[in-house]
Length: 567
Ligand SMILES: Cc1cc2nc3c(=O)[nH]c(=O)nc-3n(C[C@H](O)[C@H](O)[C@H](O)COP(=O)(O)OP(=O)(O)OC[C@H]3O[C@@H](n4cnc5c(N)ncnc54)[C@H](O)[C@@H]3O)c2cc1C
Image 1: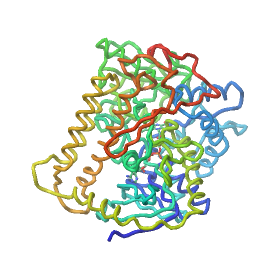
Image 2 (image 1 turned 30 degrees about the horizontal axis):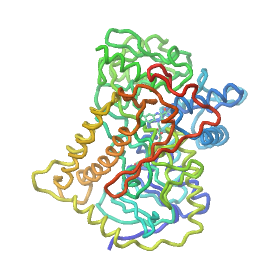
Image 3 (image 1 turned 90 degrees about the vertical axis):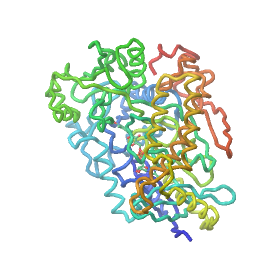
Image 4 (image 1 turned 60 degrees about the horizontal axis):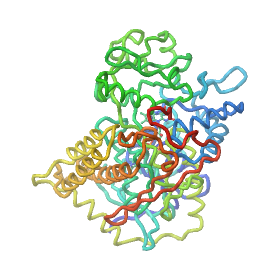
């Protein structure tokens, strides 16, 4: 019989969202347990974040610019505008101050105001300490370890446990260190497993981001929404390959009004935020639209043949404020003269598990989702911390009135058998890592420019790859640190999430933000300003449309050509 632990609130994921959810649930009086596939504060994408948006509402115009940025440029209108306002207030009144008290060094002016970049939508960076995410997550790790919350690291949730009514009552866990399988029963569960970006050959994600959260939610019958709205980074380094998530920020730079430039193979500038998209401090969707024109004209490739650089900016400013200048130094190059070759990477996902943004409740009882995994907001360190706060408090409130769940013995036994069924050597099937590479290749080839035929091909390829699952062959049947075993389980999650992503993309008959269908090259706000909701029912898929309200900032046009929009 599988060992069973108990808690009030179980938080799955140790990034910025999960860490804050655990802390806030604990402060609300709940017994909390934190489960992390990697290491708390060292895994997921939170450590990669650098720029923190400054939610400045000091003048009416500043407030309007920030709302416009969040709604139009960052979320392409696919967010809840009241949530955006509440999140902005949290950033202004809690987030920056709390982190500063914990030791994150923001710069302040002589009269005590926070110092941010000098542009229409300012940003802050704890730049003297490196990337902001590393510093912030280091502080969060210490906070949690000092709080007495039990933390299970290098332990992956593999399935949500449900009672007879379908309510989520806990998870099954696989401990990578010794192969122990155990269960944690909880009165409420917060999923905070992040954006799940490890799904295309070039990506900003680390290996634990194999979409387990989305796959578990789908298997539990939860709604997912807008999975096809997937961001790309454009100016990430091409070489060395292991540096592919090293980002050459196109956003407003500190200490200067300049922004980086993107050059095609002929050396012509094809994107510069300061001139092409001054209203957005995260101009990724505009960048990739322009890059697609360069690719079409043979002047760049998706994986190379275009360049980024800061060589038009005084080097002392770059050295003083941009940690990226170290990249040049490490490669023996000169940031004042040399440009780096770039490739695109699959980045954060706007879509995810469908939640009510005022509680982070999902469509399944007992299950909350916070942070990058949610469909309500793109992400970012501050926004996902806000989600964590909301979800942690709501889950603790719910847990207070709940009885201890009964052990769902049959579900436990079934999941244990499923996990052990992958622990096999021999046969002529592929190794799990090979299957993972193939899955990532399918989505990489599907790429940015989509159409009905390419989507059909991708779906067929994914369905064909499922045939490999029962044939997977491990190198070893050891339960200790068996990465092949972990890879096999990751591959299942990846196939589930990728299939849902492609099916969702087939349904959306427009182009929006980072989502481009060349057979529907227009933004259609009349029909598709919505959550496109998908749910798995047994072997079938159901979908529905939930329109999104735009109370403060409606789009100007009902329909407009995709390549003429700036969002
Ligand atoms: C390269 C890069 C640059 C970025 N730059 C910025 C920036 O400059 N500014 C900004 O604000 N934002 C930035 N972001 C976005 C920001 O980092 C994310 O929105 C945010 O960190 C997401 O936090 P999260 O807690 O939801 O997920 P994550 O930080 O990804 O955490 C997910 C956690 O879930 C765990 N997990 C996954 N699966 C399981 C499982 N099965 N069981 C248990 N645990 C599991 C992981 O181990 C990890 O601990 C960037 C992201 C990337 C990738």
